[in-house]
Image 1 (tube, rainbow, N blue to C red):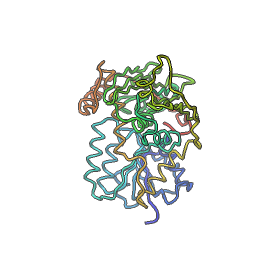
Image 2 (cartoon, rainbow, N blue to C red; image 1 turned 180 degrees about the vertical axis):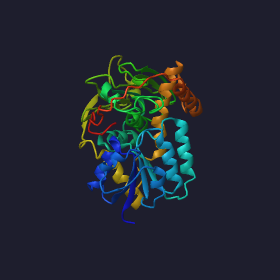
Image 3 (cartoon, rainbow, N blue to C red; image 1 turned 60 degrees about the horizontal axis):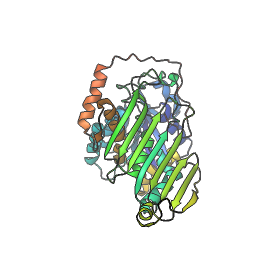
Image 4 (tube, helix red, strand yellow; image 1 turned 90 degrees about the vertical axis):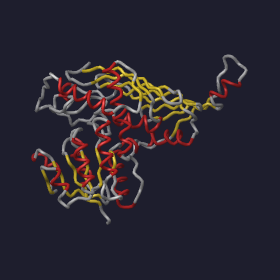
Length: 388
């Protein structure tokens, strides 16, 4: 097989972007042979491609080798399971699922997949970004030393009320399962676990409709503790302009900061722990080297994941973003929300069943009346990464 035939389910903002990139030949050896959406008017976004209104029908059509799920969040689980059970490669937009229990259902379907060669990937496009890849290399190699603290202020996700009014599913417990944590921040939550590992406990404070007329969180401040004693803070919102995007990781061999296009490493010549134990001075500090880590742009982003997925299917290349790792960002988002709602510190691994029951209660008891403006637009992306 010298090409991979893929079908896209969901031709909304991101699905139509992916379709256009494939049709324009931006992904060598990947061919868009089918699309699916419940709204036939969207078929014009993929001209000349066989169209379906039923994902089940498209999955069983024989026209595709892989299915790319780009629907609203809750459908990721059911459509993903169907694709896996039918022997297709499956790629899912972020988040992999709304909550941990649904992730577990997806993973169970993957474990029982009919073909051992089936791929299961996630669209964590920021893993292609050289800035994060370089920092991960520093951490994985041990060159940065043991992490002591991580702090990410990611508040440049500004969204207007018009954005939230552009769709009935947006920013509701029933339609989306959450707000900024489930929509804008899955990439950041994926990266913070990809880089620093999984926390052991979290304590979070989430503002529900703090800056917008919505029933889900649009502001979050969370504290994290790691098994080695390291701590972390994660701050995000869609209600702040101009906002900040600054990731700071402090470890034994210094401090790494990613902000804008720059990656800087203030490197301790002697590890801080060793210096603290052995230096005779009371107010002395380790000598530092100020290093600008070179990076080239922001990577191939979505197209990079699609290229990697295609190479994995055709050549056996390892997946850059396996869907099984997608539970990390979902679990962290769920844990932040659960901590805020219960006013307690939450330990990980999260009790997925308990959180699912809590979410179902939020849905059942919701009295929120969603305002929908059919003329509102949400296709203008806040950055170059095509976030929804």
